Image (tube, rainbow, N blue to C red; front, side, top):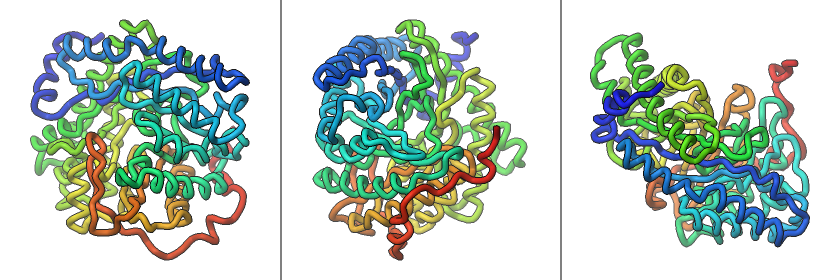
Length: 454
């Protein structure tokens, strides 16, 4: 049970340390909308979303007022559209009509993002999957609220290199299609390995086929709270350090549990999971990089960074699982460059490189996230970076993802401006040696030996 004493205990965290509920995400299954007629499919999708989510934003605002807990975003995730549109969509242009419908429905109910314009192709692609992936550049350039994801690998199936190669081309095409806005479309496109079915965070959220007809998932975040708590154990040993992170993560997760329970009750929709992810923002004092520096690094990227991040991620999860019976999603620490002022400062200082970020993804919650790279970067190089990150996820049995933004017309030394929670990012250099022959091989990288567990 959660009582008001626990709520009041977090007041200081909310007022002074940037604690917030980052998102209430309503997952909506569209499986019952499937129709062979495209016009009828779009009608069913619009009606299902607008009816199911009609009270989502108002309920979120009511909870904010009553409990004094900031709820930054109200969002929707839906069943992967490659599955929903398979019967009706015969071309990529057909899928774009669904993107417009999703965008229109999201605007109607007042959410800022809707995720699930997605395809799950970890082993192979159907024609429907391929058409959806090909439609992504146009869909993201013509809509405001759509987020897209493609799962191209898993520990059980290996890595679909045909999909990896195609995704490199799609990232580049999306950058070109949105070049007037610093290639912003790429900030709403994620390539996954081992994507979870219950992730409430964008841009990778979708509702997995194992989920209920509708479900409430909550993402809670508090890098500033953890940073402030660690200031009290400077000079202490690792035991005190770890205990402090766990206790803080517990308190933060309890806030998410409270909000999730209230939203579930008021909307009469089942509660799914709380995702405790230390998701930073561009605001000063709301940085994962600053936590790592408080642990003892002169600057993120210095020797010891990967170990410090591993410690942080593990203790956050240990604290979180004690606070909620249903912790899921991507719980842990995010390391997006553009959304974290400390990460941006580290890039400017020369301590943080793309290669070091890749090493850090072995132990963080997600992967290479919100990284701006030169617009001239080739599609094959982007595919190679995606393949590297997918391999880390596949071999380590964890979720990894890539959200690269090749900013058309900009190069190392320039800055890309995305605005809002997406922040801004310095253009990072990319290894210029080629990998085209490698990514052009057909087929699939086999699953690792330890995947055979039956």
